Length: 319
Ligand SMILES: [Cu+2]
Image 1: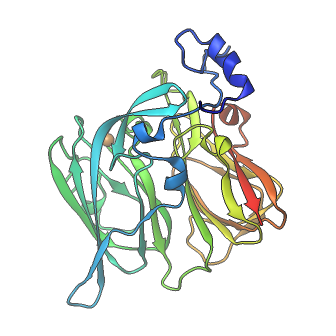
Image 2 (image 1 turned 30 degrees about the vertical axis):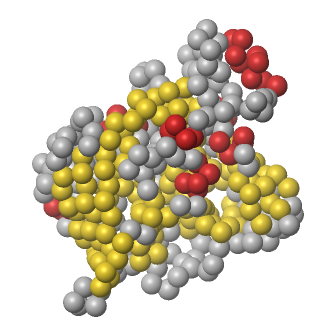
């Protein structure tokens, strides 16, 4: 018997088709927490949180490191909150796609195969030649179903970047799930820390160009249901990327603490000590802090609507 929250029975009763959500006065699905079948989805937000994909490497004759990945786009149904299924598109069977991680100065080679029934690309943020930009009409352009291409460029500059599909209509191609974090470490590594990735996203489950579900790493309330366990006094580092479509702004707010913030991760020194950052789509940054006291600390968007629709969680600092 899965554990149940007191609000679930109420939500279930309010639902006309058995799922734990109902239509709110503003037309948004007013769902609450509950179990999501992560195994059926094929990915788990708790596993994705600390999952960095370093690809495979070999040394070129020049002595440089060549780092390679293969990304496959596919059509995939995802349960984005308890009982709410969404006909998504994904890279490598997960949303967000793998967190691609490398070091400044390496040569990167990404083979992209389109296994979806729609044309797609991968557009990387960062510095690269125009023909590697992954947009329609330039270089390989859009990649048709069953086709593939190779994107190759140098890892520059160090920082926290992102990648996403750039086929029109762009809002749909992003909102369906084709995005991920792209992290270039500085040559001189940052201080050792408990590192996590949070890609802030949302899902328009009724196709009205507004989101019904908001989350960090896709699954609404995942980090409420099961807090992110961290160690007291340990340095924590969150790589935060906002890809939210349809809403102009998103944010990250931390309770009981403040964090050092490095916009775009392109510096070794923080520019701000704060407890709230705002991000437009494509904006990202690195957060660092320690919890001096044990206990549960909430983190969430500081747009209350987003929190009520899934974008909130807990850190649990333990001794
Ligand atoms: Cu696409």
